[in-house]
Image 1 (cartoon, rainbow, N blue to C red):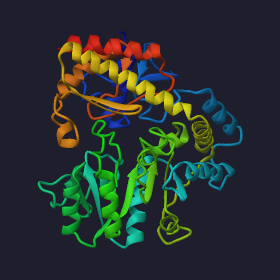
Image 2: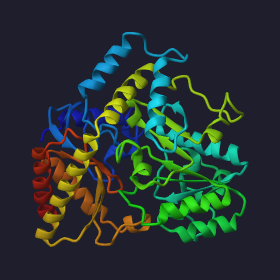
Image 3: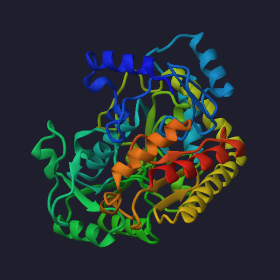
Image 4: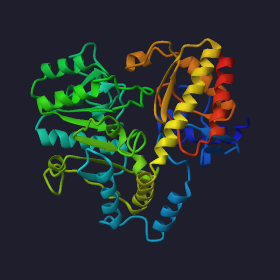
Length: 429
């Protein structure tokens, strides 16, 4: 596999961009080697600058549900750019996409468009604090909500230990207002609430975690959080940047019937374009400026190109329920093939899956939280990643990420991935 041009680009990039990349995981530090520079994508494939072709399972970290460069989204964007790129003023499509989101996501009565998932989560906790008049938040170790200061906090030594900054530049003051608990540990959450009685503004979590690898909530965990929040007057926030419109048209909350107070959404609502949103109960959202005193703004929020792509994507998903049938089938078939391969090879690695999201953890321990995920053999994962790449399969370059399936993945593609999985596992053991 020739990667000469990618190598040259990466060498130049490192002299111009911190670490040579504009988002850290792209640098391949977790898997070894240097990153590939992608030139184009179509359907289920990525094409790099050296002309190599890969079946891929990242799908731009989730939003390409119907594959890359789908003609429906391409046409919507092409038509929109004929009328200008950004106005800094209201447009018809902002209303139309808001109407779609409200109709599709059970928790959302009103919604505010922003420019990224990070912006959505930052705004959501500000709104929760402003609405409740409380300062502290609870998040879960291993859940990633973007790079806002409040989210870059590691767990302390015990359930009631305050967080400590996990990145230089995050102040101790911010850390003191961020409490962390292990995912799937309802008792730890209860302990935090009791130790900080009357001071918790919100609990924020990925209802299905995608950022420590895929981790599934235990039975009763989300329902228990909902009951605790109702009892204590705490705002429950589901970060559905990854799961929203992917695990069902109404997100994971629709699958479970457990409804948060606020929901954050990301690039899926822009068909892969830079966009985000947060929304929820009317009485909470009506506290956001200019309707209320909690300030949040953005020149490019609801920009006409992203809303054109997003309206096309959401309309398609809303009108084609067979998309979700196909995603479930593809996810089940692919993971069944991987499980069969592991059985043949005498391996007992953990494979977590919900619908069209999954992670193969290189550990024999069940993975229910971040501590479990960290028992994975990351060196072995790096070897597996490189073995799959050599066979034309492009995976997320980290053990601690979920894989995403699109409807562009055919049965033939799935067979190819399963065969590559067998050969790669066989090679590294």
